[in-house]
Length: 586
Ligand code: FAD
Image (cartoon, rainbow, N blue to C red; front, side):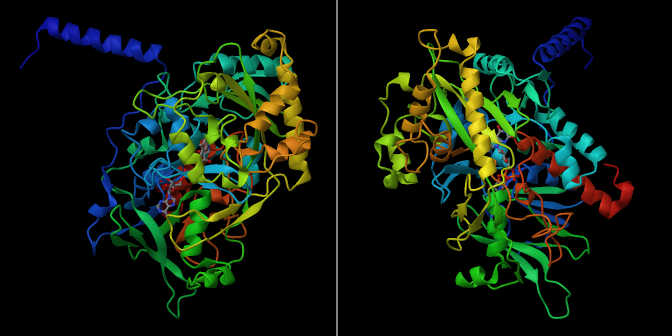
């Protein structure tokens, strides 16, 4: 049926208006119509005859771009233990950032854990991984980091934009973030480098995966860049073992398949095809990947034997070199409550300390009606529970019972400082053989004196920022903040389970140690040269690689997600080129 001239004109006008709307609202939305079906693991037929060129374990920050890229040429099975991020309001809206982290239901997108250091932490359990529960800040690793890890710079420079054009935006800078920008510059963290994804000394505004409405775009969206006919995604698929062919005569044990459970506890297996280059790739994150290698028999033999796990390969380094960048945060009570913001501005100092900020507390009308502090830390509230009783259960009970807290205790913002690196490291060990349970993780925060020195430098930088005119005018009487008072408030907040000391506000070293929290940039456990080779193939076995934050010996950039997503795409292209040569055409 032909359209009338009037109707054609109307549709042209509509298209024009939509185009103008897109222009005024920043970037064009990346179309998700190519997303593969997201099926529950229980739909996977028992004894399924299908085999794959690649099985990717963990649909997270690295796993999604990796699986999407590999599917352009090969059959890929992506197994994710969590559910879908789509339709989950705790994931999709920035205002629910805090309550999303506090949801301790067994199927929530964030799985809480407490390191043996006494720091409350969280790991992702959802398709899209950390990008579904994080603060959204997007900033690339420095070029010296790229050189140190030995990546091909040309491919890196193609892989970052591949991510950015799909899910990254410029923030409409919030008042608290603008105040930090000005405060940093007045305090000498200069020059101002404007809006940039690049890692450059001075002050800058970085990218974000939240759009201007506060809607979160995630690594799961990147699956739409794959070939839906080649990509099978299973949700609630918890892989508990990698299966090896260790027959006599084989040079090395070869990874050939995986065993996983579905959302009803049903057991399944999936296998690679017989092609020589087919692989299992573990992208289960810095906690999940070493845990799964250990559960599959790769690790220190005495540790494996103590859990009755048959040893496939003795490697004393699995789970070693775990690190988490210590963060210390100063709560700043303000005259009027600042609008909610997560991270948008960063000060990159020459001393290896990064300064960032967040403010306000939000939650949508559908969510639990109570106010929560940042990063699970309740300002001045968890302190009502004696340190030894501050367990996850206590925190959960507390959040349920505090509907009537005065709003004022949450009126203010944070300035936080994070250490580059860090140099202090720890380890991860199994507590049992149930993959759903957290392993025991120790980060040994500030065990390296240089990390402690840098924390002290960071707190002194925050003090300089608080003394600037820009911040003084935010204080209750407009005359500025007493450092002793704000330090004391942060100590009183009891943000971790570490015992406090009477000299916390006099000794900045003691303050750093006693109020350390996480910015969730933990990494390591499968270091290059120790557990994996330069191409991230697991040493001593074949058909098995690791691609995620567990291979890093330091966290990339000020915040890692940009580089982890880039690495997923980068490694996908690398693997296709290894297998197909330049004919890969990606
Ligand atoms: P993940 O993204 O965690 O992916 C691992 C995936 O594997 C998960 O989806 C998990 O469910 C799945 N998995 C694990 N075990 C199994 C198994 N046995 N079977 C099947 N699936 C499994 N970075 C920034 O750059 N900016 C920020 O603002 C920022 N804020 C953060 C805030 C929070 C609360 C958190 C937690 C992190 C934040 N980060 C931020 C850090 C960043 O998000 C992470 O470093 C990054 O997402 C890690 O990526 P990954 O691929 O290594 O692991």
